[in-house]
Amino acid sequence: MSLSIILQQMGVICILVAIGILLQKKGVVDALTSKKLSAIVVDVCNPAMIMASILGGDITAGHKDLIYAAILGAAFYTLLIITGLLMPRILRVAPDKRKFYNLMSVYTNTGFLGIPVAKAILPPNAIIYVIVINVFYSLLFYTHGLTVLGKTDDSDKKNPLLNIINPGTVMALLSLVVFWFDIKLPPILGNTVQYVGNATVFLSMVLLGVSISRSKLSQSLKDIRIWVFILLRMILLPIAIVLVLHSISFDKTATLAMCLMAAVPVGNLPMIQAEKQGMDSTILSSAIAVTTAVSIFTITALIAVATVML
Image 1 (cartoon, one colour):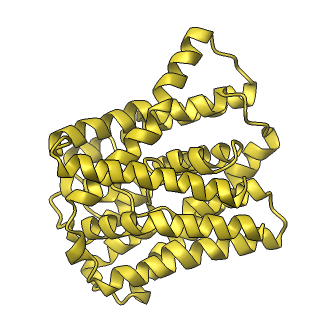
Image 2 (cartoon, one colour):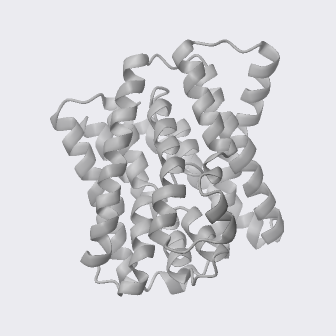
Image 3 (cartoon, helix red, strand yellow):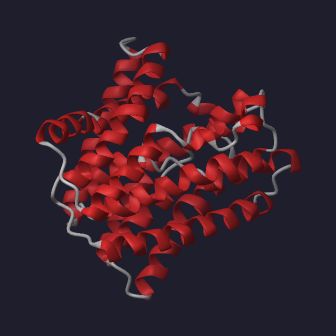
């Protein structure tokens, strides 16, 4: 994909985000509406888009690419887990707050934001790597993530792994099965999945704008530690990943996909889980607000530079 197309597509995303900001300011999308639309995107539209990307016929990747994606995914999250251990110490975070910066470093918005952005600006084959990354995300958060958080409620103790079974993970795994065995769905099912999946980019970007508009962004922008986090985790780390993969002549599409997955902002799941367990999630909510707003520009710059370099 050319640099001009990437810039055009990110421009479209910026406009969609601006629509979300406008709708929130006008009172069209309130807190309840945003919550319900988010559930639709996460549990219905995003999973459908994953499958629709596989069924679209634009992917030319083969079994070898899926195996490479699994290897890259494992290496990627190994790197992120190590980063999560080091980041709080580099930033000199108080011991009782280190777990939050650990989670922020590992569990970013690879699904809600990463999937639609990948669909919009990356070559079709990139979706294989994005799907695999999101499978790893789900498997790790409800095991490693909850362990880092350190406190679980009674439901988590009884069924610690049941949360892994969610629409996103199930559809991602089904999509990989469909891809591996080249399964053809009946037209009525395939077309339905396509229509539902097509709504994802618009709804997710509008909701992103709503989230930015509702956040206390002006206060969060004053936190120097978050800016250092952005520099290290959302700019330098993606650059390092691109340089390493480029140095070993790895596939260009895979490199761009991993760059995007490393550049997306802090995800909502750690904050939701922290709030569920009665923890003070101020650090997480502030980081989500700032990194999400900044990511529109950092992702554009990183993908543009990586495209030119590769």
